[in-house]
Amino acid sequence: MAGAAKAARPVPQDGSVTFGRARSTGSVVDAVVEQVERTITERQLPAGFRFGTKHELCEQFDIAPATLGEALRVLRGRGVIEARPGPGGGLFVTERSPLLRLAHSVMQLREQGATVNQMVAVLDALDESVVSDAAAHRTDADLQDLDELMEQVSKVWHKPVDGLRANWRLHRRIAEISPNPVLRAFYLNLVDYIEGELADGGPGQASLEVPGFDAGSADRLDMHRALVEAIRDGDQDQVRSAVLRHRTLGRPLTPGQRPSC
Image (tube, rainbow, N blue to C red):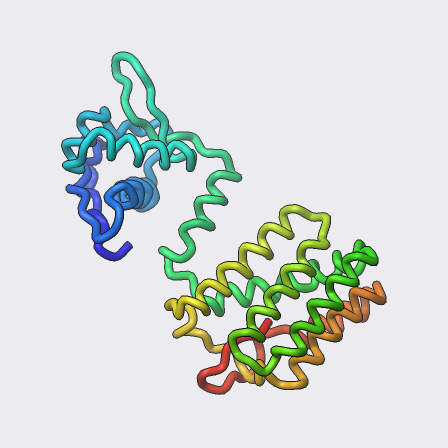
């Protein structure tokens, strides 16, 4: 986070952690949360590690109890820390479930510098499963929605912003057909991340180097029509062929182009 609180001081030999004064150009609460989470990750602090009492943390961060309370609510909600009462109590690192650890890792992708092309590579890998599920489980209502979305995509395909948005709506609707909640959630979150980075002009956009296709070309539009037709026909060989043709990575990209996916 730009302008966030200072990094925690090195862990002394007795295993304790002392935090720096919380300063941020944004929310001080966010700065505290970010510093605690970063310290746990960078120091690989184990479950049960004691940070200290609320009073001690207020002094270290130089913040009011109410501000610390807000930060603790966020951290408890994320399953990062827990409060234990009584002698020897205080604030401790929690034993997080694998699902909570996974969710936390996903939330930190942007802070860790994940790029759009890295996300597109994973999206490409998931496409076959997503489209295969859609072909196997689509209903008449699903097909009607896809036809309507494909018509919208066709109308705005050569408009960079509108075409990109319509494209993502089509991909989201295809993913929503899958009965697999894990696949569906991962795919939709990847699409959200990519779309957000491209819209924000984030670091991922600047580093995007997807080889060789014209994102707004008639050929690329036909690839999306082929995806919808493969879903309609329900033929898995046709699905694989359409997905491989549609695959974003592996094609040279001219400067200034964006992935249509």
